[in-house]
Image 1: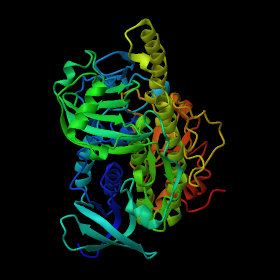
Image 2: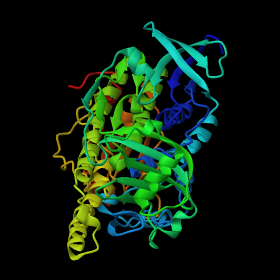
Image 3: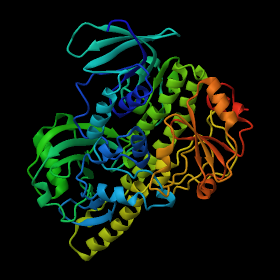
Image 4: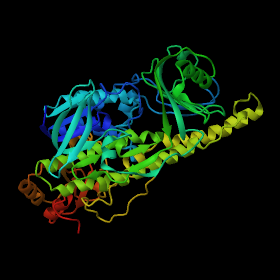
Length: 554
């Protein structure tokens, strides 16, 4: 492989890097992905795939595979709060099982009108699916156990040195672009000299400070947990705050406990992990520690730049979240979705290099929005004070638990029923969006108001034949022609042919769709974002010039 030339070198084989490899591989872009780890994640890491991410997995053809992973299809996905897991239940938000989600999605309207609903699945399973599909694309080369050691951008190509983890001799490769999806300690970001913006070091009783993470197996745990199962168990007491997510729905769990300032878990043994787990459960339960470590909550950070020259950063290399809301991994996936079609367009000669500037213009404000939401959710749960009376078996204890239950019920609905966060992200300041000046609905976490105003997710609908509207969108550009009297689209088609754009016209005569989009024409980008809408194709050349960065926004 010495001095091979690739279109894109991807540093990092987590969800962001693997999603990017899938998006580029399906477009025939020659990619090399490298990661110093021997393979995909062993630890569960992120545990929630939001609905928008599931829609992208559906677009790529493997949403059903992801939904079949993790918990059994009939396993509850409730989030439940307890003083300790074997003691008093304080609050619970009920959410559909994977089987119920498949059925309910076609009946929901309003905020949850979607092609897919969320799925509770550990990241380790998602990565395996992403890797399997990324390897299937002939244009992709994926090398785990191989690290990006250094790189140089000469303005025309990126020259990179790779170092095999087994100690073999270094290798050199060249690529037209490099994407650093190499995590929170990103070597790509450090070599570029890009600093963080935002806040870190936020202290809270929970989700602010050092956390102990234990991946464990315990077949006996189900015997002491409440008969009514949940997906996530949250412990709220004055001694130790913690949460635990079911990994396989049988015996494996991802357990995370807040550490006190005087505790040095770096020197802890498995016996210490067992002690802390018993403290949170409320009684001793045999566990097998599969892995353990520590991490730091209290981040709301976004890199000050996402691009320098021919090098980009994405995922955790570009933004760091406190994991409330499960937004870090899902934001990372959408980074890849946004960047991939733009890289492909430039590499194919369908768009100028200026199109790549829109990646930072779109994704950096979105990351700032999402980190702010995650911080709000963390404040809501982490700043709640659990007093000793909460565990008393007395009238005072009952009153304290009732008050805590009211707060936690409200919090759970704030953090875990978030269609507004999931679907409401927008690119209104983007130079490659043709804004129409229409009033926009408020950006609220728990309510999503569909709008076809350019810059956001297209409104979704289920068609009379049972298909999702999104399933009819073309893999690249789609021009919707809606209603029984949709205008001519010849001008768009002619300009697309002239510029080599892969555009397909989708004619749907249903009046309800015309009303939903509030215009007879709507241009949908390859990442399923509305780029423009209007009443005629008279400005087709100007519209396509702006959305592909051939011409600046007027």
